[in-house]
Each structure stands twice: as C-alpha cells, then as structure tokens.
Image 1 (tube, helix red, strand yellow):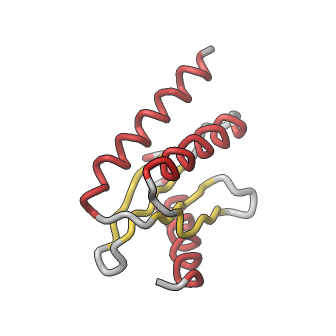
Image 2: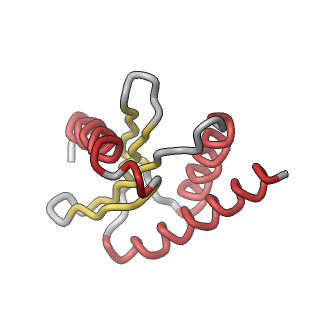
Amino acid sequence: MSAAKCRKLARLAAWDAHKNHFASRRGIWYFDDLDVLVLYNNPYKGFPAQREKELARFRAKLADEGIEELAYATYPSDGYTYALVINAARDREETVAQWMIDLTLESLREMEG
C-alpha cells in the first residue's frame, strides 16, 4: 500500500473514531483488504501529556517487535483523536490489543499518582 493511501486511511480512521466511536475511547480495527491494523485513541481529557507518553511507549513497543508504523493522523484540528496504521496482520491483532491495554493501565496508574 502506498504511503499516500496509508495517510488517507489514517485520516479517515481518526475522523471515524472521533465521530462514531468516541465513547469507546480506544480500539483496534483490522482491514482485510489492506492487511493492516489501525489503532485509535480518544484520550484522557485534561491529560494530553499522558497520551503522548503512552503513544511514545506504544511506538517503542512496535519498534522492539519489528512492526512498522505506516501512517499517523489526528482529528479534529486540535489533534484530540488519533489513528495509527501499522503493518500487522490479523494474527497480531490480539497481541497488539493487549499491548494497548497494558500501556493504558500503566498510564492510568501514573495518573492516579
């Protein structure tokens, strides 16, 4: 998939996550036709720095595991919601979702202080 298509998918996924999946806060989608995973996050209101730490940790985990980030986008203009397209097939979905859960729990513990 071209870089332009990945960026477009990330932008559309960020929009969709913000508009249609806001209540779920975060999640993961698999796109069969593209064989990629897309993660989205509607973060902690009032804790933007925590989201950035969580995202940095997630990106580090992807790098450690050899999973390529294909695109990243935010929506709306303030960047509240993000979508991250990664080069991972369905067989990695459960593992990647668990990483996301683990990092979210770590972030929540940090916010509780």
